[in-house]
Image (cartoon, rainbow, N blue to C red; front, side):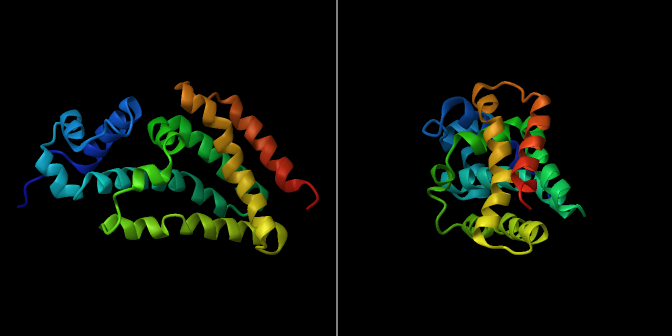
Length: 197
């Protein structure tokens, strides 16, 4: 029977995320992550290959969690309700997973993905946004009858840009996202998508 890993990947990534949010990217070294997680330095290199690959995996995990919160809503039968629920799901994600949301909001993707070139995670990065892009086009077809660029952009504004802009100040200040924000996001999404349909 195989031995269970003493420090699982999520524990290590959680420690790296805490360190990154608290001390910044320059201070998030392999040695500092090892100290934060309690995992030996050699174990981190063995599991992730490099600091760059570890930080890339941290970004991918947060992005996939965000997508998992949003994408199922887009399959609801009524397209406006699907858009509203998708946007609200991102607000809920920031409330329920504040550290992942802060990571995505406060660090540029390229900043965390530098150094991951040539690693196994690089292939995941190339297709990471494909499900979201496909869902935006599909919802555009359901709402407007086509997936023209301006319609896809309008859908993206409603279900991605509006909720992410709405939560930014709370994420940056470390405050809890208020429940009233769900109401405002709902109104904004409806205003963007229902007007002149």
